[in-house]
Image (cartoon, rainbow, N blue to C red; front, side, top):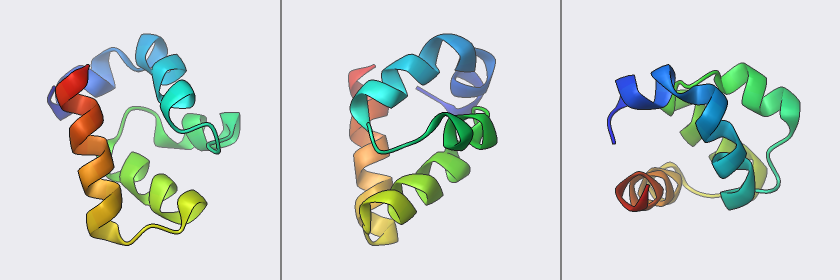
Length: 65
């Protein structure tokens, strides 16, 4: 999945993001607004992951979507 697909389908995808990363709040999802870098940053902040680990999580999720 590429960034354009995430951005274009954000309304449908954000429910799946919430399922995958339950610590993300509705406010977080609103701020992310389909931006991949924002998603990585929020996951990093909420879960205490290193940047690389958050990137890897998002990449795995993208590949499975």
